[in-house]
Length: 504
Length: 99
Image 1 (cartoon, chains in turn orange, green):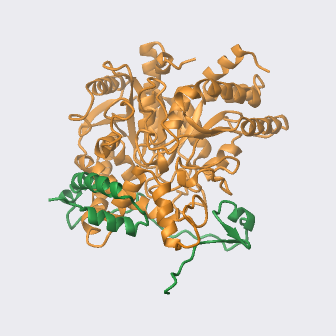
Image 2 (cartoon, chains in turn red, brown):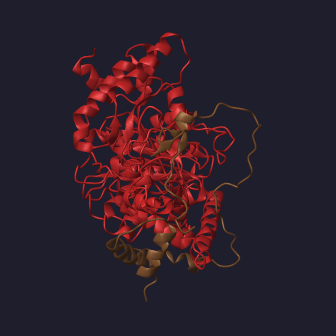
Image 3 (spheres, chains in turn cyan, purple):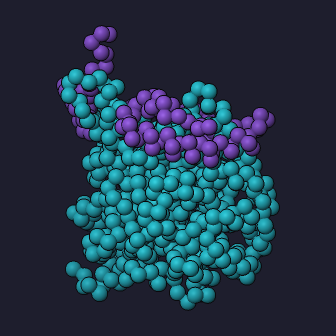
């Protein structure tokens, strides 16, 4: 049994430090897991990051890790490290709902590849985190099970759709968390919670067992309190998966090595000039400008780059993603799993299906299904879906041209800091603007990372710096991110999260 | 002129197998009108000679050896089903009485 003081010490450690301490025998996986479970029991009433925590299941996993380590098993650097797992990944020992009523209480018969790899790495899954229903949203207000709150200010959103994961790490309820990024759903919540979050190259991390939203965009990725920890988690669950036909059969970029290298000497960094102006909070732009100057002071060559098609990316995304969603969510048909309502023996399968879907899906999901059905319908297909796919080509060309001249591109991660809960709930277009800077990367399939770059002077809330790199050059984003993180820490004399009200 | 009418939304809801309420149809018609007006700008930049990109990666067919593996047991496959009968998914009637 650990003392309260020892537990408080454990939750402050980075994932890398926890892994090393478990390996050295300083702490057992059970001790570490108990420390985080106690922390969650203490603060999650305020935050609501988790949809499901089962103390016994988590401790059983930890005991199994301790047993394996005691038997001399060769486990990776994250063995014994707890992780908060987004409820969009299937888990055999915990419910999986994608925060939807249509999957309430569903226990999948198999683990997602990401889940399986967390287990193989000896990580302990603490529980499943809240999210926007089926990953549709930028605020975690679309969850069927209630909103998650931002640990920096409980009246504000934690970002979305992986808002439960970002809030769990920012409130020190877990050292690491998983997320998925379809239009920015890792980077934007990381930015507004003061964390590091990565969207790996599309196909670099497996979608098998991930409840699909938009198949050509969905990408699993990590959340962490620092760049090295994010790289360790990235490396732990990435890599080729024969179960996913879009998985890339190539080595995982050396992201951990890049995070340890942490230098930008001689690198060329492009500032995307389209990501500024109307809709951007002045304090966000100010911190971004300072970040660029800091990178320059570290020896990077900074140039301005124009990517004119990025202005149309949001529009293309909100045609492509709903189109794919309307197709993917057809599987929720009340026949094989999930909710079924009004099956009174007189109604047809089609009626039961329609009634169940109307009751099981929330407003944002219905809006996107209808929008996608419209964009794909005969007579509108070329005008909307077809044109959006052409825009996607233009965006890829903009990236390709830019990466001829620079190693990485940078921008603010989100145009504003965390907005108040409820502020944009009834205005879909205002909500969609939260993804303005992150979407082009998803449409092109490239890699990107968000790192904290300070607090906005007007509201004292975290601002994110987005670093974008070509597909399979994820290591560049970590190299720049880690160099920036170290320089900012040395400039401020502390980590950003030290000033959070939920810092232990 | 409205880009999308309430009747069109009702038609799309039928195609999508969503039994929407009257107030949902009204609300969605208004919201979709705003969204579609905003996203219609893709047509301004997309011209005929730009090839479409449906996917970030070049898609190739993926083959694997035809090997026998253990799959889910019937119990596992049926565990999440809303209704089960004789080791099968039980579904509501597919054909109406007149068919």
